[in-house]
Length: 481
Image (cartoon, rainbow, N blue to C red; front, side, top):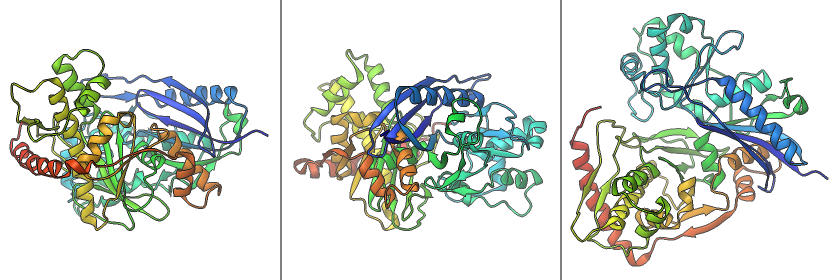
């Protein structure tokens, strides 16, 4: 008998990965396609959604050819804060604007005048959909006038698969704070209407496959689930599904949050519905592995970055080690300041590359702690951190994060959890598991838990206090955008 699988895909700016994942979490086949990013002007980042569709078709075809399986459903995840503009017939009007594009910085200030948001985490900045629509209204009014819907990349793929236009209830919750001023210009109201779509939670069915092109013709009638953004899929795939569990999706930057039992709001963090019974508060940092790479390149170290992080982690923690605030390119959650920069303090002649790298990885761990501690103002106390992403592969860094946060850091069997999280949502939606938590646990069990070292608890608490003074200093030194 062929094993039942979920066909899933994870769309990023640079690649799309697809897999057939069994209900036990086993990956039966996986395929990848590279994607191109266009930068027609400085600060721009665009992509043709047709390339995403072609990549999805090619990878699904490869997965189906490689594994003799019985697909039960499709569930996708993708990068967020990226916009696909469609006309009334569902045709793409222009290249999608990707998450890292900064063309709308000035337009964001104009949009924010008319749609004020008190919480900086959900306010309008250069990466916000409303800012991009403000830019479009000013710079390409014809396309703005012809736009009938603005979708996240995953939702555009779901529409192509099913013919049904919908947004997932997790990602779309970002727009719930948007309320225009009474005297806002007409284009503001129109822009907001372009974001108002029926919502489906990640485990709810959007529709069934109606696409006729290969290989989707072989999947006709298969249910397509709502899915969600990559952070949600990664966190859920790592086990962050119950109140009191924090998550850290550790990549180039860190995406961090805390699952709460009920809706809550804390300035500096993004509130979202999360599971069928829980919510979350969280947000992205500006630096993670990118800070370690910067230090590695700056110090001109030999060997690999992984070796350098391991060497730093092998040091005995002490009060004499340098300290670092990782605001190299500003900071997002919970600070939301693009005009701040990093600070390193406590250097001496006795310090070498390992000591400097220790300061960097401890500083990134401190940024994780900042978000978790801020989220705890909601009344939910964190009891563990579920870690995922490439950074989770480092034993040294996982241990430092446990020491700095004072929380157990739990690493799952599969650290690239985006595909697993999407598959778990579909498996729950199919009724294969009674809860999303049960689906996540069955499909990606914990592999190792890093516990805070009791012998160093007082030391790390003292260093956290000292780091607070450095953060105050960093925040007082406005560098400019």
